[in-house]
Length: 374
Image 1 (cartoon, rainbow, N blue to C red):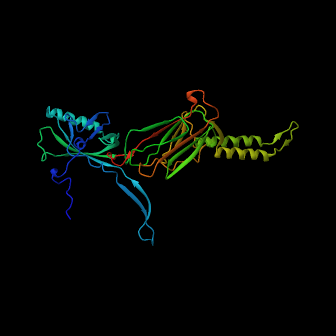
Image 2: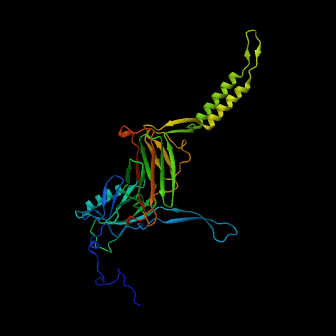
Image 3: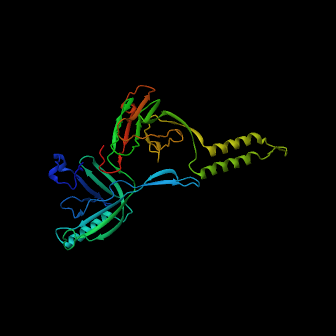
């Protein structure tokens, strides 16, 4: 049977292109550490790409295995998404003069920095829009491209290597406001799971929050009044409280001198119980109650740094120790639907707009490649 012709090397007359394929857009630009913007594809840009950037095909993967004596192979322990290494082959030139080109090269180096600050790389495509990733310059080396194109005096080529901080590209945050009790469908435009952030306002007796998908979900309840044990902020505070309790104990256990000169021993049993209670409460923390009325609550469901705080800086984690989110918003695929449900039980009907229960859902889509289409 005949083999299919390659679209890359085949005769263009043997296949047709749709009209939209003739004006496809893939643009790259960078925002430097000084805030300057470098559009590599612009006709008047002094810095132009000699070839498409490398390293945009996804972050490398590293597996962790544990070898055991007597076991064939190894036991899989986990996978780490590594950093991206992006390579830019660029021309630096200017049509005005070689002196002007050298000036542009100096500005370009200032924009790259020395790796102590991030530059931001953008990739813009017609089908998936804007995606960006933060990176730091790792090395810059001079490269001679004159064998490919005739060069003018003052033109130079550079091979710039950037290393990213994170493994995946990000896009604009998707924000949804829920001001009612019910369910809401959240779409994940990226190719990686998305952990949403929540901003909760309004007065409620308790609020049930469900996050996940049809594959699995968590439901947690946040009461208006929370009770929990709050520990001291530092060991110095613990030491001060214990030292103070011991000093008070010593003073109270001294024999009492009577007016006739005799002494009476003090019953130290109750004092010992009081000392023990003071030390235990100091080491274990004190029980406190927090009223969330009139406060705004911020929740970050990312398991790397889970956060539940109020707008006035109170950490609610000691009051909600069991609130942990195990299921993110999944990637859009057939048969799996995101699941976000909110049920607010009101102590009284709201009379003002500020008293209405509102939940703002913020999600940052992430993708392996900047042209992933969702």
